Amino acid sequence: RKTSVMDVMRRLLQTKNIMVSCSTRRGCYISILDIIQGEVDPTQVHKSLQRIRERRLASFIPWGPASIQVALSRKSPYVHTAHRVSGLMLANHTSIHTLFSRNLSQFDKLKNRNAFIEQYRHTSMFSDGLEEFDDSRAVVASLIEEYKASESPEYIQWGLRQEEGQKPLTSVPERMPGE
Image 1: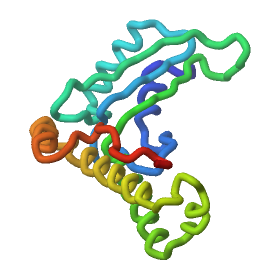
Image 2: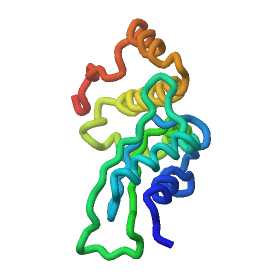
Image 3: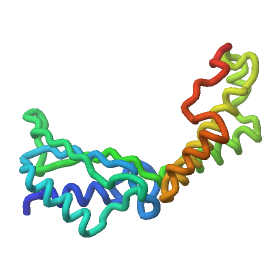
Image 4: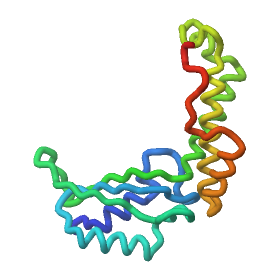
């Protein structure tokens, strides 16, 4: 049996084929880009996208358009594969906040024990203090909050409230590293 475009696109959405240790069963996709390589007819891609929507294989954010971008490429003459069609998916999913939360928890444990801190104090960037770590922790914490908020239909209003109450998340830091 030959591998079809639908098989490849369906497998790309399966949790077991994701290279990050967070499940996509909870949460929703913000955006997806599928790169399909091989002998592909664009009508097959269109039919596959329709089936994915009909079967609801991917849940998308409630406040934006639900779309999967697809890029087609020819099969490489230099790399021989057993399959007629192969694919790669780049996706932004809200469940990534679980990975960031685990990292933040591990960082807090290390920071509380002052593990590895002495090595940083000897570098010129951290000679004045270790505030850069605190700033970075705050950025990751706000990223976690934003990913959690992006799962709700009121995300746009959440973003507007954030801008009214505090500086935007994309602001330039007041103190540059090493100053």
